[in-house]
Image: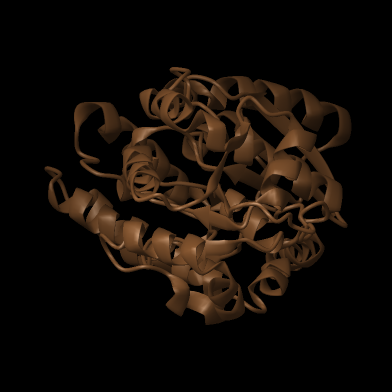
Length: 360
């Protein structure tokens, strides 16, 4: 079976997802990717270079059985340009949804929402990594549709909801095994982008309070910078907690894995998280979670969802974890092993099965 995997924003976790599935799949996978830059423009215009690349491949080797498209391109436009045969099935993998973000009806977001909606309308199936994301996207689409001048979007929502399913992001967890710790203070890992939707200032404020109170801890600052580069919060942590920092960006892959494996506690203060690859990696490596009881995190934690902290409870949860790490580890027993359900060895065969069933 032949699968054409389209990844219009080939960067970060999107790139690891695409290359991970291409490597782990039992199907023949042709990967067509565009540079990870200017995502809004890519969503609007990326269908054109993707269609050109696929047209060349189809002329040489024929069309695929399934077209698996990351949701960072207007799939409806792509299909209009390609005109695939009826036998080619189309799946949109929705890493993130603009309609599930704040204020989707603002001018800069509205076109992106409409592009993603058109893609869902054109797809045979729409895959989300978590039930939270699926539900939030559909709720957001209802609200968005109610604000529009016509009924076109509203009329499609039930039909599109029936096409949705949950397929988690595959993660290469082979390297993320628990490491033997040292006798030093607990290492707290920040592995998120230094951008506003991850709310790093909440993390920094809690770290400052721990330091002011004389609580011993160390920091591994492994999160990447966004397109703007740099971060005032990151600079603040370097200035005020430099002696506590055991790892900081930029990190190559080996250094990143080492930082994650050395961590005792992984944190999140995110306002938006549709899956959470870096948290899965850290939990698989044995970190104790200090993550909120919302967004995708309860699903990641599974049977351990009770470990998540309530709203506005980050500072207290972080303090409890670093001051009594033994108890926190005891409560997290079995969590590392449960992360293996997200390994490509599990996820890729499930994706293969779903794609094969769709194409028959």
